[in-house]
Amino acid sequence: MTPPPVDPWVDAAAIRIADAIVRAAAEADDGLARVAVAGGKTPAPVYRRLVDLGHVDWSRVLIYFGDERRVPPDHAESNYRMVRETLLDPAGLEPSQVFPMDGARPEGDTAAAEYADLLPVPLPVLILGIGEDGHTASLFPGSPALEERTRHVVAVPAAGARRARLTITPPVITEARRVLVLARGIRKAPAVARALGGAWDPGACPSQLARHGTWLVDPEAAASLSPRSIHITGTGTPPRV
Image 1 (cartoon, rainbow, N blue to C red):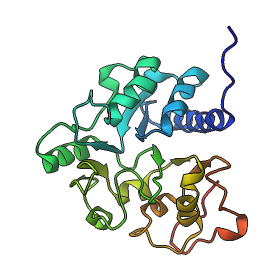
Image 2: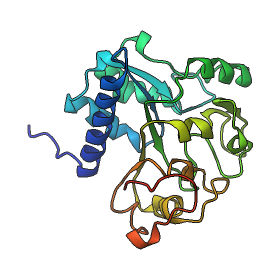
Image 3: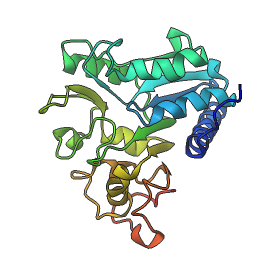
């Protein structure tokens, strides 16, 4: 049976992430690449392709998480579950190589503080997504977490239908050595345009915090972008799209 064709955007995104991981391992004193991954729907096929490529020596990779819903690890909405099914199990990572956030723990602030002690900052590789509202990780527009400057992980309370979460904070994003942002689909186009070309206001569009990173954007998500529309009014360097 002929295998299904590889999605060009998925393939390109996986190659860029693989390259970042390989470079991070080569630069590390102990030869280990420390990677914080994103949850959500967009990264899932990229993670599967990342394993299929065969470019990464997964025995030299440690996996961390950028955010997590306050649910058990086997819950359908768990970022850990998605990453385990699409990346960790297919790549054959050992439990000692994976550092999930404890989303099931009742004491959110304690879980956040303990994870902050595990999280390497600056992160050598940080993979992020972007929501239709411009959020990234679990930093949502108007969230008090956007004002955090000292803690690296905080608990985010539930809001409306949105579950309580744990998330990395702005300093983790701005200090990461390699940031890769995955954006796909026409519904993300307004948020991508605001993130990369809008006036600097991360309180309203938190994904602007990753503006300095490499943005892996498909044609639909890039529909509202043009070279002339991208202007940097913050303090970071121009994005790579």
